[in-house]
Image 1 (cartoon, helix red, strand yellow):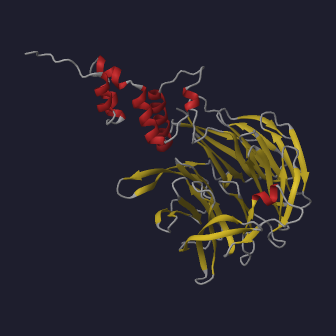
Image 2 (cartoon, rainbow, N blue to C red):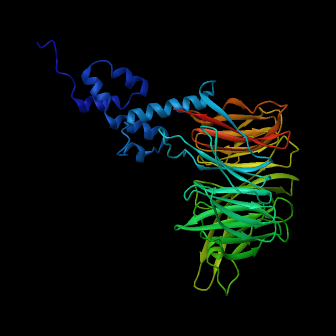
Image 3 (cartoon, rainbow, N blue to C red):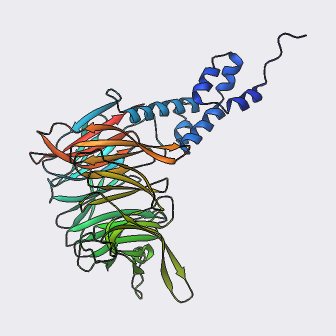
Amino acid sequence: MDLHPPPLIRDCLIHIFAFLTEEDLITASSVCQDWNEAAETPWLWRKMCLQRWSFCNLAVLGSEHVNHSWKRYFLQRCHLEMKMTAGRSGGYTCKSLRGHAGRVVGLVYLQGNSAQSPDLWNSRATVCSASTDGTVRAWDIQNGELLWCSPVQSPLTAIIGDERREVVITADSTGLIKTWQGESGQEGASFATGSPLGSLLQYNINNNWFLTVGTSQGSVCTLADSALTKKSSVMVCDSFKVNTLLVSRDKKWITAGTKDKDDLSPKVIYTESLTSPSEDEDPLCQSLPVTGCQAAVFIPTQPARLALIHHNVLHNNKALTVFDVSIKKTKYKSEIQVQQVESFPLTLNTRSSQVLLEAADSNCLVLAAGQELYVYSLKGALIANFKEHTMSISSISVDSFRVVTASQDLSLRVLTWGKDRDHGLTLESQYHLLGGSHTMSRRFTHVACDYSSITASAEGKDGKDVLKAYSFTS
């Protein structure tokens, strides 16, 4: 009898190892040379990567200049997420970015590390901020360096960015819109609307660039290409400021509304009516069957599903209603169809009038009101709620990995998504990030994130706001 049977063939080992966790796979790799070679098979680590994250940065792994294995990608990304989940001292750096001589009105990531396709070996991020001091500033947040500063102009009121083209768009108190090259800070085109703006919205349709702006007089104006050529203008809010402006995932619909008038209904507009208007027909536009619009968001996993918080006339409180928007075209006309999917009352334990609403990739809604954070399913089930701030939440950032809340108590709260075998999707509170001394700063006002960093603006007591940048490294 042979006391030393032949080892299992490589394919059988790989098949067995496919059922192991990463810890067990690493342990198995140290048993012998045959097991080590099987455990190092790229297919096994690729499978674990895609099971955990559904999408990974294949471009980096396949780069001619970067030689990284699926195993290294998996272990390094797990290590980075462990740091971001724990938030321990030493797991991140914090930079204070000073230079603005006024209030920060907004900040955007121009070059960030995408949560959908993170580059774990090149985590440099550029954040642009706009201020009432009339300047736009670009920052290297990992090194805490100012990259460029625009010339001083009228006080700025809004900023958005187009990461694809590395362009920043700003609006000032006179209604002047300008574009800025993200790399150099060079001024691009400008367009004067003639009145202060309520909101900015940038989107791309078939590689064509568009900017839609909501004015303080209730109109929506659409501009095209890098020259900011005017395409259309339509009245939607009867002289009230348009401060809600969203585009659907399929880019076919724009929602416009105002938070300043409870009895005005928000409207959905067929995007083609704004980007390619007809001289013979008015823009295709329809009011939604609700009154008021305190917050709204399009669901990222659906082509044109809109969630909206509005006044509940029957119960004199707030309600959340979900609509599907579509178009019905016949030989002679086109009609907008708005179908209600769900509607449920909101029992918010706050008197705060400000409500913040974001949607997660997992088909759930994240809502902040007063000091509390709520997570709802689209069916209206309350998945989780948290009350961990001592003052009101002023801004939230939501992605597929975490939720970050910024508060007037000068702290950020970090929460991470997870999956429970019995209860499904969960959100778990992790830790606070502090914004510095209360003798120097009042509160956090804005927060934005990429995959490996968090940036927030802290309101200075001397009128000069400071950016706080927290960077996690793998």
